Length: 222
Image (tube, rainbow, N blue to C red; front, side, top):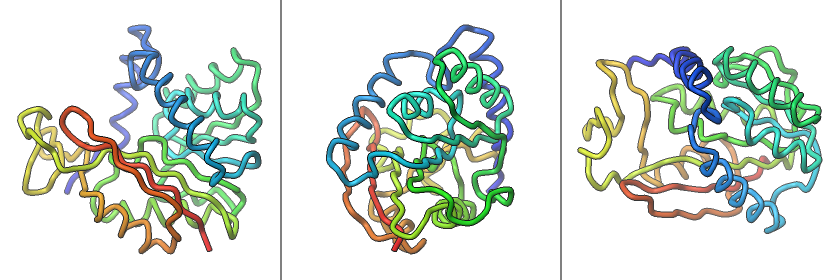
């Protein structure tokens, strides 16, 4: 299927011009994400400190929050507008964090395995088809042995297809013309993808939303 990952930059340009908080226009969404992450970190499966890579960091809202908690954070996103926005947020918060424009399915600029933790920043559901194993292979390559992966993703089943503009039940993707923009894999399929990338599962949970499911996977690189 066709993709247009670079097209996310136009959305960031528009949101920034409109005074939004980031990809999600409402700050409440990020506050809810922070509460979720705080609960996950408190459970003790994630490293309490160290080097952390956020794949699909967007405007840096969560990366900056993690940097405030003491992590040595690097965020990567394909959208240059998002990365510049994230750098500005880090400066405003007076935290040290590195933000780089890059393809999360192929981070050739990085040496292998420099990170203690990798966070999927609501990015995996934007990755389509054969790019999904590449994304997870990148996560595995970036982690030290014993490193921690957190996936926080939208997934299916989609309850009311009419509730998502352009949703195609056959591919389980939302489409903009002939371009796939989101993939709503089923939980067992996403779990299998993570395991196929070589990760050991630590914890899984699913939370129903209005028209789909949100899925958390915590995993470890052997």
